[in-house]
Length: 510
Image 1 (cartoon, rainbow, N blue to C red):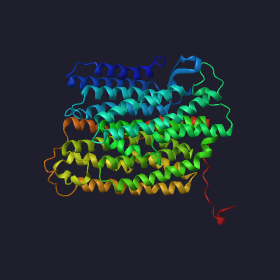
Image 2 (cartoon, one colour):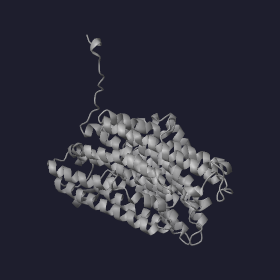
Image 3 (cartoon, one colour):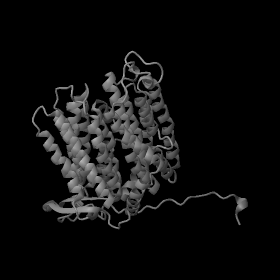
Image 4 (cartoon, rainbow, N blue to C red):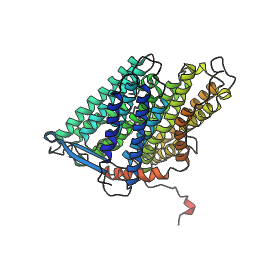
């Protein structure tokens, strides 16, 4: 079954489904939802079947590879393939898409906007998410990197909150600016390469001969685009607006999956293609990451809007992820990849549960809540577990990845790791304060009649919490898939883990 075009099939199913949903007659809203959910579940099943065929110990750089000439005059190929890093991120998208569709069942019912259009956009977005993680041609990756903007722009701009137009335009402008720099760098790669029908294949670009100045310029082009997409401080300001105004399902896919393309790109392209420039830039990047960890956490503490608070926590988390990548240790990079997955699930749970609260109360403001655990204990309980996961409580999934990132960073950059650890303390403040203000105490006038989780909402939250708890206690299956790909990346960039230095007292020496 390894010759079966798994990745093309994975991308084609939601694409065809998106067209089918959009083509439904007007007024068939329930059918549009049911069809979108069924298609997303088919994608999930195919993803599971493909994952069972994946061999973590294979010597090939990519598995399920497909390479077909696309624009041979410019060396562009339709080339797909996955390693362990790409596979777990595709699986993340495949799990979160049906969860978001089910969670969004009634999100656009009370508006004048097209219901079928919303669910068609979610499926179209899934196509691009699968494609961007699977692309092994640099130009194809760039095309899909930019194409993702289109459905997300319309999800925010057409189905978001009161400031949706401003948030959508800001998201688009920031992303287009980063994409423009990346396009210039992609063109520069082609100029430096020898051309040929497969010039843009990732494997063919690994050993290009750059001058130091050229390599640094190309690195800056790619890194800036990925830093904006992630986002890292100080190019993060579009995220709080976009995440706050997007509908809950759109916010989950934006922060939980799309933003991972930025950190994935750093690990997949910046480090292997430009290893010397990456080492040159590492002190600056590490500094930005540490600032982002603390800055995002501090601003989260001061937020009065629940969705903006979660967005700022993500800025802090992305600082941790990029920190592990540029620590250039196997522990750091494995932890960062696992962090991408774990952050996707914990943030998805937070955004969706907050979305359930907003749909009941009609407000995003923390001050408008209180005493929810007395009237809706299941809602409060799931919110607590998701929040504790976000602050990396031991026994929940994010703890493992955050621990690996800090250990991997400490072996090379002790000061950065120590300062970043402060982000964990700040995380406990913003999560527990939000829980205390919204869930504990006496019910307020606006929360006294809140209903608890419905059966549909329980089905939405249950798999997320199951993964959060399961990976917290037993992350080995995911790490077994990730680690060989990380070791290959370390070989590509010519790095080895630092040897541990254990001081020996004078009296013990022989």
